[in-house]
Structures are given as C-alpha cells and as structure tokens.
Image (cartoon, rainbow, N blue to C red; front, side, top):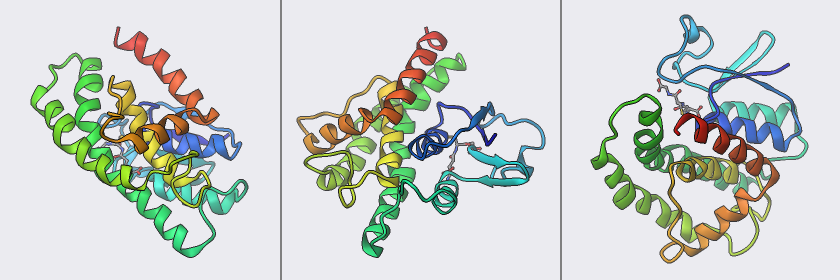
Length: 216
Ligand SMILES: N[C@@H](CCC(=O)N[C@@H](CS)C(=O)NCC(=O)O)C(=O)O
C-alpha cells in the first residue's frame, strides 16, 4: 500500500491525505515527527520535511509535488481546473496557503498545540502577533476572493486551492481559533462549507479526538 510519511497534525500531510481521500485512494501513515525525523530520513526527503509519498521504489516529497503527481497518476476526479487561467489561479491559491497562510497559522498552532505536546512554555508574543497581524493580513486577500456560495474558490469546482486553504485553517481550528465572521464574512462561511465536506470532516474529527487525548 502507498505510504505517507509524516503526522496528521502537519497541515501538509493532511493536504496529501485529503487529496487521496477525494480521489478514493488508499494509504497508510508512517509516523515521522517533523524536526525529529529518524536517521536516514533525508534519503527520502532531501529537505528533511514531511510529507513524503512512497509507493514501492517511487518516493516523492513535498505536498505540492505529490498532489501534482496524483493528478497525473489518478486523474479522476480532477482536483485541478482544466482551463489554463483557472489552473494558474488554483496554483497561486495553493502557494498563498502554503506560505503566507501557513506561516500565520503556525504562529498560533506551534505555540498552543505543538509546544504543549512537548511540554514547553508557549511564546505568548508570537501568538499575539499571529492573531493580530499575520492572520488578519492573510485573511484580507482570501476574504476578497472567497466564493459567496459553495466550497470551491476557483471555477466553482472543489480542488487543490480549497484543500490547501482548508488544511491550514483546520490547524487554526485545532488551536481553538475561529475566523472572525464580522471582519471576514465570506471567508468564514466558505471555510465552514469546506470543513463540511466528508474528506475534511473525517480528518478533523479524527484529529480532534487525538488532540483531546494528547493535550488533555
Ligand atoms: N513545502 C513543503 C512544506 C512541508 C513542511 O514545512 N513540513 C513541516 C511540517 S508541517 C516539516 O516537516 N518541517 C520540518 C523542518 O522544516 O525541518 C510541502 O508542501 O510539503
């Protein structure tokens, strides 16, 4: 069976899991802790990061590369638009989510959840900066582009952009934060619809149970 190296608390590992669930593909998770990988892990992941996809001899790191590969290997159902302009837009939403949004969410998630798991003291100033500066900056652009209805930000068809945005915001929810619907109404409502998809609901529910045991 295909193996995904990583942990489900990683938004990038979840991104791969969501794409595989949407495409009805089976996989198993091989637990690899980010920042504390086993010896030799760089042979699989030259940048030392999770996720890594492994199917026999075929090894591929990086969530964006893995999703692009999955689309070619398993085209149905498609997660990328076929129209060239929509395709380009979807890739940029993915990049935005993987960089600016990821950095903003990590400021809260890493301090509140990861440090708690590691029995370290959270950096309250980093959390404050995340909540008051980084997240509002990331949300402003997303709110301007969020759809008024449905769970798809590009072309009205759910895909890579929604997976990339939703997986980061799932970690924000795990860290106990909700998007302020009075400031970012379109984004808040769109994300609720994304979270209601069976793929997201299954992952979030499983992780919530895991976190409630670990962080209790
Ligand atoms: N561009 C990578 C980012 C992956 C990433 O940053 N993973 C984190 C965990 S969420 C990691 O493994 N960090 C360990 C490190 O940077 O050494 C992807 O999309 O897969």
